[in-house]
Image 1 (tube, rainbow, N blue to C red):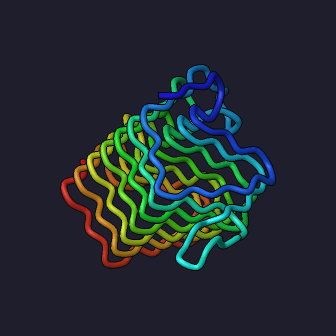
Image 2 (cartoon, rainbow, N blue to C red):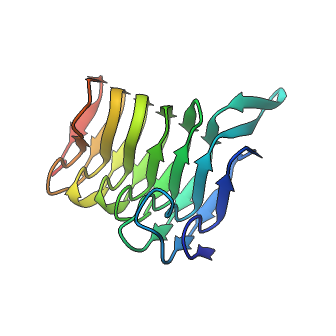
Length: 212
């Protein structure tokens, strides 16, 4: 239940931060008067610039180039106005962005109801996007990325007023494997929408059920 005026309702990270996120919950955080570009938004977390993140594992701390968010919950975070990332806005020069075993529920923002990512390469694995809302890309918006991999994820009951009920992809190459898209709603592209400029998209062993 934290709030900020422009970006990062709970936490904001700018340039060269060393960060460890492990088994965290971000609930009911909000951004009240954000700017209408990638410099404002991120109801819970806002990342900008290059970042290196420390991740805890069974062998101690592992320092990895890029941004890693694991085993965390984001619920009922939101942004007002026409901005990005109800829970997370990541506008980063990181070499790699990785989201694993995270749950995004009931987050709201105009674009990217749960998450908006502007980065080079990224992967999302074993994560759930449920009941998020937005105008475009209610679950997840990937604006600019060279290579995107989404594996073993669930997108369910996300609602967009315009494009992409679950997922909006603007990457050069995208790979979606073993994912489920169920009961997502949008005016155009109930489950999935893409932007001009995508070169290749591979969808394998995934299920699309009752999207509208």
